[in-house]
Image 1 (cartoon, rainbow, N blue to C red):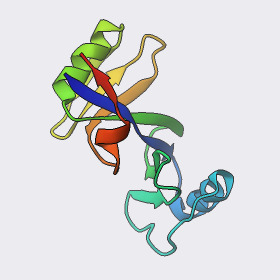
Image 2: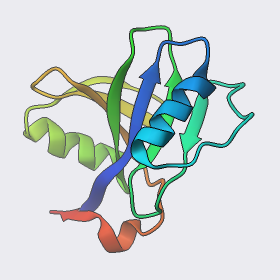
Image 3: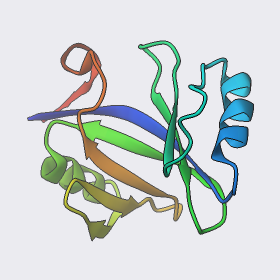
Image 4: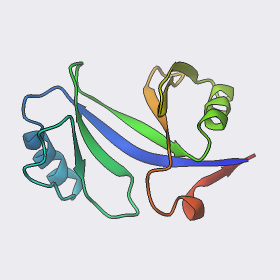
Length: 124
């Protein structure tokens, strides 16, 4: 048995100004954006602890949004999702990239938010 749940919404931004993009998404989603922290590739939008984590990621490819599913057993979650029709795209050191039957890409990651044990789905 293992558990999983929606962990993170990743907003991939092809941009030269990640902080500008974060201000938009923070306002759109009702989150707070730390200022002066956009020097790297990632910027968090802080919201309610019960909400999925929202991260802006500076990318070279066209902008899109993808999700991360957090789990306490990445291999078991990959097998479960393959059984539902997803395909494994690439296994990285800390996450696995998958593709849904609809061709949407998403990642399987380890547990990243509080409350996981109480609120995640339990799978046989």
